[in-house]
Image (tube, rainbow, N blue to C red; front, side):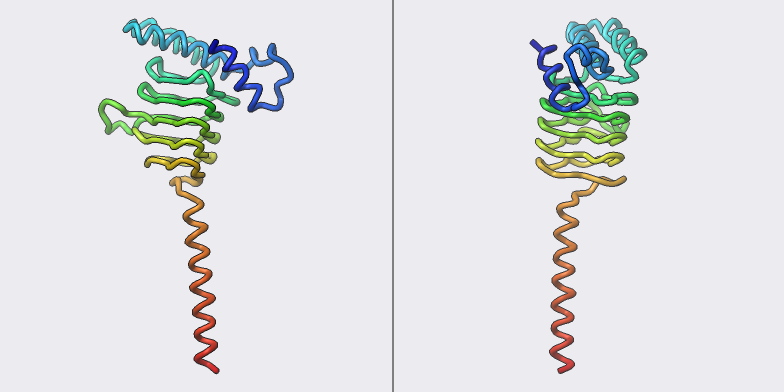
Length: 191
C-alpha cells in the first residue's frame, strides 16, 4: 500500500520521527496523500476537481503540487513549506525534497515543461530546477542551486548556477600539477 511506503520513507529519512502517529503531523505526508487523490481525478480528466483538491492541500500544507505531476509514493518532502512541483514533473522513488525547492518550468517549453527526477535523489532547500531537464539517479542538488541542464547520475550540484563540483575538483588538481611542473622547469632553467 502506498501510505505504508510513504510512512516508511519519512521514518527512514527523518531521525526526529519517534512514532508512526508523529508522521501524521508532517505537512509533506499530507501533501503527498492529497496529491495522490488529486492526481487520480486529473487522470479521469476531472481537472477542476483535481485542481480544487490541490489548492486545498496547498492551503493546509504550504506545498504546491500540480495534480498532473507524476509522483512516486516514496517521496519525502521535509519541512515542505514553499515547495512547488509543476504539472509535467515526474518524481521517482526514494527522493528527498527540502523546503522551498521548485521543480518548475521556464515558460519557453511546450509539452513536457518540468523536470524529471530519477530515483535516490536529494534536492536541497530552496533549490530551483527548471525546464524539461533530467536529474540522474543518485544525484544531489545542493541548497539554493539553480539547475537548467541535465544532471548525470551520482553527481552533486551546488551553487547559484549549478555546477559539477567533481569536475571543478579535477580541474583544480590539474592546475596544481601544471603549476608544480612549471616550478620544476623554472628550477631546472635557473640551475
